[in-house]
Image 1 (cartoon, rainbow, N blue to C red):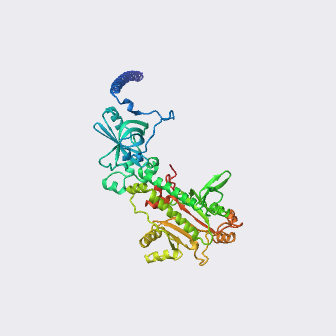
Image 2: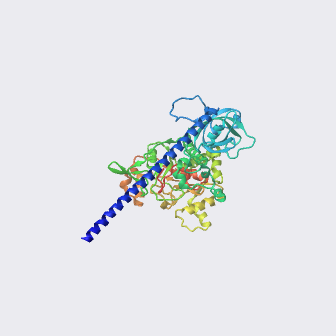
Image 3: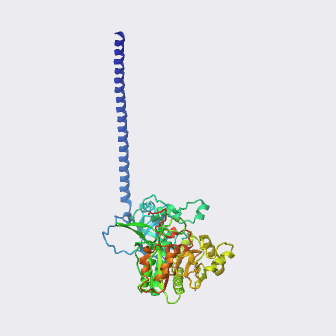
Length: 543
């Protein structure tokens, strides 16, 4: 009995302690919450006071700012109005425009405040010009401060007077003039944090290493391609590449060629190999074209005589090299000839020479811009183009210490070595290699009538790398069938191709050129991804 009573007393006492402790804890929490509320209220009051003070200061500043209508952020352009205002391009800012008052639209490349002045470098495409704002009759200190705080890459409109400069501005493309800004308005504001800095992206790699300054690696460039394409180097590369296409078209049209468009979704692999992308096509499968060759040849059989096309080519090759892409732009040619396939070689080489001349004469600005970041020797070519036979090339390589068979295909290192040997001997970066061994060419290649081990086929090279592969095609259905069987090709899969030649086909030849490779090698660049706007390779499918 005594034990039970003692236990009950202890139990009651413990419960009482717990209750007291609970009440004390609640009181402590209430005090903490109260203190927290008080702190938050004080913080909010201070913030409101600060905002009110800033608003008052801004209002006072606005009242004192005589230039407040001369700068600011424009409303979003939604085609609200049509202004009768001409905009002058940065590239057209020359000493001839000195003392003229003009409007310019450009990006802010860099900005630097210095006392009561602000220096801007404005950029449009690959051209830059220096602009100056200084506190005075036309610009208030608030206006200068506004300009100095604008983010890089923002697009602005400025009204300015063009002024000649006594000393050349070496850091800009427009070295003889600068702009004295009188009005400045933001058209589109960039975020402050850029994924890469444009000045880093145009810095030569060696220079960055030596001076400890940043350069931008290839993956960062390609992941942020929209920014990278704004650099002066990228602008120059792709404007020159556009010139390659234009010169290709113009030259061939002047030669009587017809431009054609060919399907890219096809029912069978166009070159009979495994390196083809398969796509779902309703209830069956289709393939992405590895070449427009079948359709070019069909057009020759349809009496178009000379055709060309410019379009995407797809290769499912798992090649992670400096010169391979899974999608590239093909410049393709096919041509009927009268007596000898060298007629076609001559036409293609003359087309390439006209492209080289056009680039040299019309794109010097772009070539020089690329050379600033990627120095290279000027591209050399001969007229008429040097043509070597495969046997001669093998002899040159053997004389240089290379061990290879007479009918062995050229490896990439041997191609490059041959390019150096040809340059040393003939002083040209462009040449044709003719009469390849038949064993290393596709089934549709015409055999050499004088030596069955060789063929009427050719490759063309720039700076020791192949840019075109071509041949006289077999235009006889019976011989084509025999050649296909010799290569172990399923005749059923190429039936439509063979049938194209059953109703009379003129002798013809052609070839395919890679646009990105031509651009890369003409400029002396070292990676085809630099000359592909949005490259596709086994590891890259975006952006």
